[in-house]
Image (cartoon, rainbow over all chains, first blue to last red; front, side, top):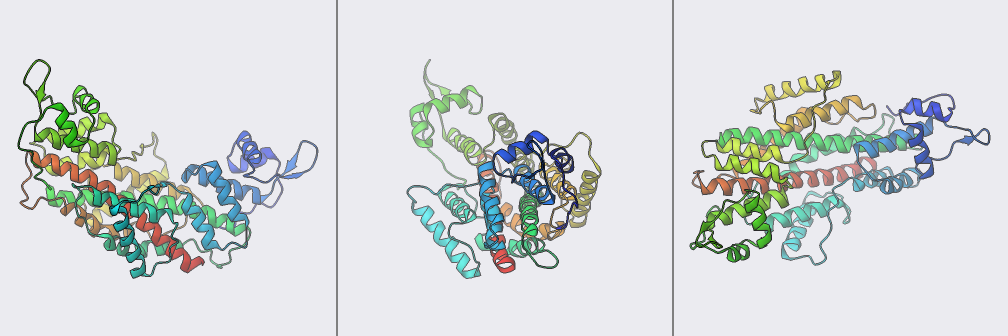
Length: 224
Length: 224
């Protein structure tokens, strides 16, 4: 799946047919600088190649599956294009732009601080490598703080149980992004970024859906 | 936490102070029929009791934590009030109104049908009790169909791995909703519904956040 190659150069109409993206939309991406210009063959015509097709697919995945806004797509594409940046940082750039984006409160109250210490202790304990600015870390702290603030919150299974439940899933998801030859340069960076968006969004959705079904089954046993 | 009792009756201003809900908002809930009227003590004044306070807390949890629209809250409250309906069905009514609400496509294509069979097989295999109309089931089918349709989708760990990873979590979450005396009638139905909203929303958010952190850690190992 990292090898969708089209041998010949294409005019705009053909790029539109091959990608399924309307000409007006392609022109919009060109104006916004998301898609680099084609090679001019006359004053009004340009040719596009397989790299344009791959990039269009990545843009569509970010927009349609990731629901990432155009400004954030521009940031991601800059990281994809900068080959000196590791694939790990590139995947982080993709994940960090996927919503939700919880805000850090101006003044962190005692619940926020306690939740933040709880998350730090968990990550240290598990030896997970996570940046301090990871939006998922802020989301986790915000959620644990909300649970601490809410009198009617049920205790649930505890934070560590969640981490242990998902660790192997996440490892299988991420390792399945590796190209067979494990080479990640140029063209395959774009393809990797596309697979990462698709995988991150859809695998998370599977997790959410299956978790809700498991709750329904548990509810039938405890409350049925 | 199922026993927040206020001994005396309150006027509107006191109900507002005790609940933290503005008077204008309480009046809106009364007009919308979400909150039952108080006991009239004169032409312009009514008294409210602890049941009003509990119900206000449930409404706030549904609105603020669950982000459930007013029309859906009305449906949930009707189920909460109908004591002949089991607590299991009541919890289902809560979960089913939490978004996202994926639409079933008008004409299910081959990918949808294959995904639907995959989900049926999994549920039968695990022996999970889930209604055919569960929105999470539709969400799961829609997501698996999208993965099948998307050429660049990474394979990931497979559906069954997700189910096995979350089953114990869901059981611990749901069982932690049970009141100590396991009696669920009248007042405690309202409290149970409130705890269920808080737990379902915030526990799911923990799951999502921890899963993303696990992905980041896995990415540092595979792509760092």
